Image (cartoon, rainbow, N blue to C red; front, side, top):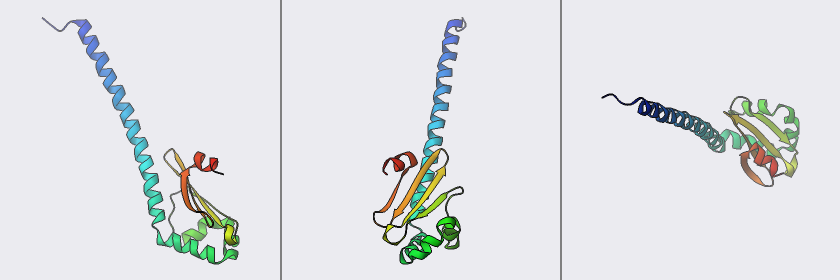
Length: 133
């Protein structure tokens, strides 16, 4: 006696549920991999002695900070700092009010890493970072 047709339909429905769950899990894994890449980037930047040296130079020379404000990407590249492609860099203020911001996009994650001469380092998703202002 063969498997009844209604049971085969049930089997097909159950298999469809498993296919949907697999696709959902693959999407979650992709999102987690993209987020891991962001955190790895932030860790690498935080450990980059070239970045710390470049920030020290800006802190030591307020005129330098003003002069590179419109070409921050070139300044950091010349100092050997490697940001992910598409990173938007901003240098604002000067003296004890110097702020350096990097807007980093990886996958569907948009993060902002900030060094504020008065308040130190921070990073957060851009919508959260903007809410902190």
